[in-house]
Image (cartoon, rainbow, N blue to C red; front, top):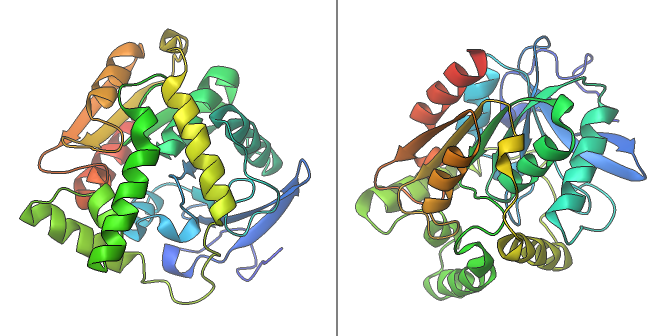
Length: 288
């Protein structure tokens, strides 16, 4: 285990400098980073399709970690975590639960973005006592409209990125308006701020497994979300192409304690484009 900071996560205030640690549980060695205060309920971040530790916007992580203990991690088979990547959201949720329990937490808050939001919903349904509050961003419910098209869109925008020498996330996460383009460029620049100890990129095998899992989620029968009794904050951009925004509206409506934040002139990466507003809203929600 990399314990460069002496006490686990203690004193780390910037995601850029948070050391990557490992913990082994259930036959998997999970890579993770931890920062922020050492007390209080931790906020565990669950990440998106193809993402590794370095894909979290440092403004969002640092913003939440200014007042809350934040933990990011690579799920099984992704980045620096060992094992092979599951092909269902349910199996990914099981791995996330294994990881959280290995760190010894009785309960946590979850922030799930996109695919991570799907995983968070399953954790809340299968292990309700483990979850205090949920922040679900850029995501949708099982069987949600348009979710099964993520594979097609991802392939299309990857090709578009290659042809225009741009990162596909510029198309997938942001609108094509002036604000969207600028927001995307700024976000992609922030992802490069960490220069030392960067994570391994996702393998094509893992990426393919995740695409299968999301497609399955999109074709599943809708879940009974009335069983999620925790407070839920749902946030998205108003023009999400990857997980159409109507899914966020649907999600917030179907959970008993849901509230909704929609960002104007923004897409799937609305929380990154409006990171200041999102952090403020999320902290207010988590500390209520």
